[in-house]
Image (cartoon, rainbow, N blue to C red; front, side, top):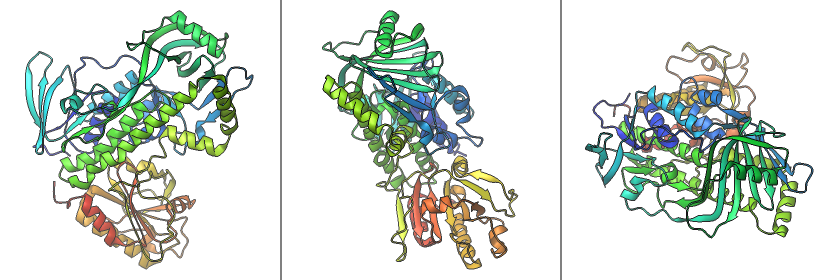
Length: 571
């Protein structure tokens, strides 16, 4: 629980990113104040898609699975169909069941609904969105951030917050208040989007992308027959705002690029826009100030990465900042790792969306012909599809260069193999081997569900069926970590299963306080992490691998944790 005497962390902006930051911070035990200058929550669809990795990190924010409400409210999309003029058959079909996650699909959910559900989750932790509160200015100091606010009635308030998280959008007042540059450029292509009913031959569980000489057209199912139509209009010489199209103009574009068989009606939201590609030079511009989401990076809608990248920014920062704010973690290297880890992800999102947009809108018949041939040939190759959906889903994000990524290899473990430190742990089916702690022997569970505690997880892999000495050694490592860092780390001993009669009794029935015994019945988890011999894995609360050691030596692990965490008695 948070310290009642501690000033709350101030989160500025209550869109999807700010709400996620507030939820995650509160979930990890920090006190939070959440403000937004808008008087009302977003009421238009705007961003549309929640990808697999975002659903995984949301799922870990609630004991019962934080992704469940979003899945129940959203529309499941199983793949993408790519078409082009002059081809009777589809140019390519990309299947999302290649995503290595329990969420092997995209979830279409308008931003207005995402914000509604996030606000409910935030409220369940006692955090109320203070609406109509505007940030007027700030003074970022080493000991805190002094912030001037205008309240809904017009009065002003000056507060000092120990930490400020700016989730206040592309026109971020916090970023402006710090006189930060926002380098990048505006794309010259004009775009239209429209949320309309589309009836005809579209598959309700797939996005349809039309590559046409006049420009790209995308049709994305929201709740069929309701679709999002996105159309590229080409370069514009006009420096002004892009005018919103009329419904009859949208009909003409759809008929031209997707065929006459589609009927467009009942517009809910229509807008014109121009793509911006910008990235700040640092996500931590002052010791106690952090930027997340559109305040730090903006790019086009291709791939649906914007909202997802921002929400993942928030979850990456939250567990680290909560540990520091509660006195349970060291400021360095925890907080410096945020920029090191997340800024490259923002840069890649900008690059990927830009490549997709330029490919979709190639000028010239020759370039388009080559593009279509390449898409037709490589789009059906399994490795290409797998890599494409990994990028979209966010499941391939890794932080090997992070100051939080480390490992220890003994003389005989120089070819350890398996996951590198910084990688996301894969999900795996495990089985409870039984213990004296009241767990149900034989119960099957998923690895990623274990992260719902919000703690770092210590996995002690016993490898081949271990003897009593190996079990005793691994239990002793877990006991030493528990004595020093308390409940900040939860331990599990993972062994092959099922166990035969030769297995040590202590492997099946552990003493109170010993690591929970889990079996890896398929052996795939041992293989994935390279645990051919007794191995230690320390997973961060966000599901990424922080540290691994082979052989299972508790000394390097203790040194690693001491760099990150304070003693259990502090905070």
